[in-house]
Amino acid sequence: MINTPILILGAGPTGLMLSAQLHRYGAPHVIVDRKPGVTKVSKALAVQARTLEQYRQLGIAETAIEDGFMAGSVRFIINGRVRATAQFGEIGAGLSPYPFLFILEQSRNEALLLDHITSRGGTVQWSTEVTDLQRNSEGYAGTLKRADGTSEPFQCRYLVGCGGASSPVRHFLDMPFRGATNEQSFFVADINLDTDLEKHGLLLVFNQSDFFAFFPMPGHNHYRAIGVLPPSIADPDDFSFDNLKTHIEENLGFPAKVTSHSWFSAYRVHHRIADSFRSGDAFLVGDAAHIHSPAGGQGMNTGLGDAVNLGWKLAGVVNGWASPDLLASYSEERRPFGVRLVHTTDRAFTMLVSKSAIARFVRTRILPYWLSTVLRFQKTRRLLFKTISQTVIDYRKSSLSDGSGSRSVRSGDRFPWFEWDGGNSFEWLSNAGYIVLRFGRAKTGEIPDWTGPVTVIEVTGQAAAAAVKAGLPGRGAVIVRPDMHVAKITAG
Image (cartoon, rainbow, N blue to C red; front, side, top):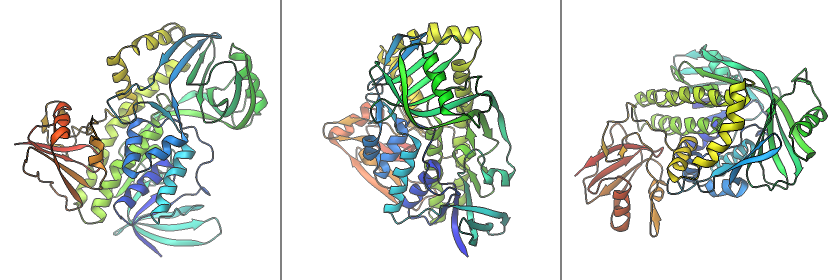
């Protein structure tokens, strides 16, 4: 009999991040997945700055960067010719320690998180699924059924569904998953593309009827390719790569040869969101709660953000540091962002793939030149970075935010990144738990409903001057939540 406070169903990037957060606070849990191991192939690629900041707290950001690829630009190829190039570079300079657009495929993120969990004594029960799930007076019970034929009953207090779009937890909860599915089928493939174009960023290819995107991957001429599946492929579940290869080469409009591939697949794009991310003591995280188009590279990062938000709250409750009432803030904080994301990414993706004359005109005549022009200006570069990097997410309307603030920073905001000679603001946020920053010998602010770890830091000298410049008080206290969002700002 397995008796655990927390059972996580699903060990994709979201489930693994949640496990990593729970290990950070020593919160006991069990994580299972029906797969035999980490994903070998995946569609998710982009790792946004906010995710790298969260990896930094775990001590794995630098390893991630060593494994990935910084995308310095995007080139728009219209009817076979490079019509515009938008330079990214360090588009978010001064806003984050990771001011660039970064590519690290999902399988590498999973491996990175699994290594981190293993280094802390954690394990994943692979090739294991849950059956006979039911709710009882102590939480949730059922049976863990393993691929070797063995099974074991379990009892948990909190149940977390991280099992993707087909989440068994969401089905168990009978939670509506509202939205729709795009009528078109798309392909994704890892290929080697032999072309004269220099490999230093994304390639977006448009012609009158087709759309392709090529994302640079580590390795010579290695790209992740996506596009609309051609009408000549009648069955998206059964087609040969030769047909796809021919389609790519004949419709790029410029000389290129697909010399090899490692895998390929077809898929449909959905945009759906659950009515709530919580029901009782069961939670939906990542794709189990919301799915949307790949536009903007937001999906995997949003799931990781869900896991960070829920992780410290679950740990606080299970460890007895906080009231169970804290858990209500998870859906309250994360679902509104999920709703906005589903709508915005669906509109953007529709514009990229629609066959309407207006959409074709926008993506071939307006978008390339507009983007390459506006990215020459610092103000628009910063705005674009904030939007796609997820550093702009705030919880100002949360019940955990009291409305306090100091100039440009308010409770619920992401704690700002800034530097001074010999240091930076995120060095203060390395310890687990709440962080209390004291400026001008201020009194330490109170942390309501929390008896867990707290680190108090006296900020003086150049650091204090840099903090004031970043919008923090010259005299007062700033209380920072475990997920690096501001909880409260007091003056005097």
